[in-house]
Image 1 (cartoon, rainbow, N blue to C red):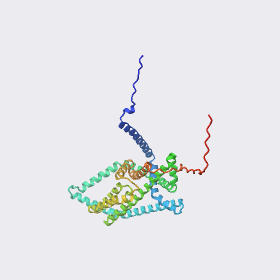
Image 2: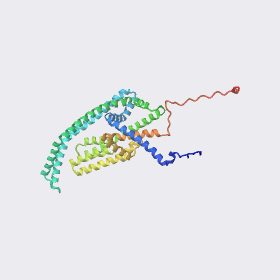
Image 3: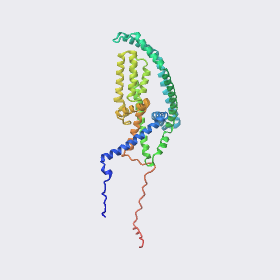
Image 4: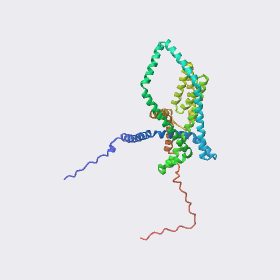
Length: 389
């Protein structure tokens, strides 16, 4: 009988081209990461009522924590420092809101008169212009709008109820954000040390350093954004006051709030100011206000942001725009507000984790102490006895 020899087959992995093997390995890893991100997004979507207040509390803590730390270094008890900063911050916010609301109430009658005069002039222009729209046609359009409101009253009522429910969620989130902010300011370091206990001990110190650097980046981002928003509000508000646009102070406050949403917020709030100027003062003043807004935003984008952000938040402009777009698509205005600081924190933390140049010693494994050398003697060492065979 002849021996049957089975030919040795090549390994299947070696038969596949290396480019295909590397691409396949990267592909399934990317799919796993995307799946994890998708599941995380679903979880956050289910508990967004909790996640968003905690995120806002984190932003506020990045703004207020340095003040609390400064008071604590000067001998003020941390609990008292936290209380003073919170009360002072709430007083400032309440004062600003009261001032803005009172200014809006005082300027509203003037705004109403100017809007009515502008609408009257618009009706005259429509009747005498190339469209030749008379008062009867305008009244017909208004009647159609009124009929549409009456026909869709049920839908509008349900929308109002939904808005009321959203307002209830807003109050709940506001209380949760306040309590979370108190704990972040008073015991933020302990909370973070408790969180990093979930990671293995041999990398815990490096994760701690990465988290601290991420929080430092967040502090730099919030400080710079607040200062840029103040400069925007002062510049545009001063321009509105000079050219006599009504409600200049509430519009400046709107510009300040919009400044916390980079690029998009400044454009939106500036557009509102231009629209008010167009309705109340005409197109000449509106064009001047457009020039003021453009000048202020150019100074902000080309001078203030690079100078103030500096190395604290190293994000490219394209990354900022993409982050705002993704956040707006996912969660609207709140997502656009929170996505850029989230990307800034992740950028600083990941840079710290992948930095191979710095290898700090972990506190769990201190460096071994050096053993002293034995004293030198003139005696020869005794020979080591060998066992008899």
